[in-house]
Image 1 (spheres, rainbow over the protein chains, first blue to last red):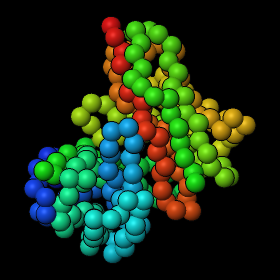
Image 2: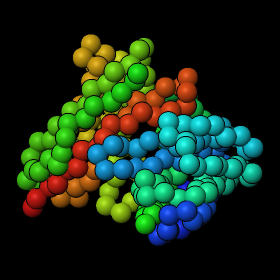
Image 3: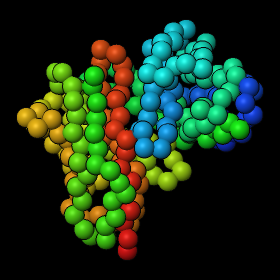
Image 4: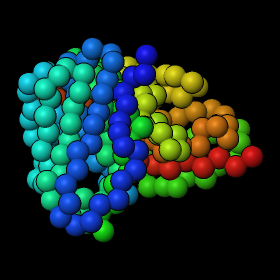
Length: 114
Length: 112
């Protein structure tokens, strides 16, 4: 049982390049989330999904797109990377979204945009 | 809007010292409250939670009590160990928008 996995672990991009971050979970969770973590700011929600085939915007969605074609996978895309997108990206999943909801996190992807 | 405020770090303590990390929140109603911990190089993991006023969450020697009257959820541990060195995040959850609202995190350094 791997939990939540993320690929890649590290990536360096040049401004304007594109990339896709992959998140996979093997816990059969309905809900999945993408966050970014910046120093002194805690985590901010980029996009989330409440089930296969659904996506919704979070707090900071601009410059990112997502897809949830399969229940176990949640992809985060950067179409034209900018230096402001340098951050650590975390994927998380949860079984439900009720009281006491626990989110399970992947190990993170450290992205640098030059 | 809803927000979470944590004490700024880093917090540096000696082993076996008493720990308090303050967390206060602003929200309408009664959200669920959480403490997550992030060990170096890892993702976040749930440490403890409380879903209603006066609930006490506890795990691994850590405790936090949901105080509605002071809108607080302070994290405490009686005797810290070097292995407790990590970043601790306070968060609140609103089911209405599926979002966890996070504090900025508090880095804890325990010296032997």
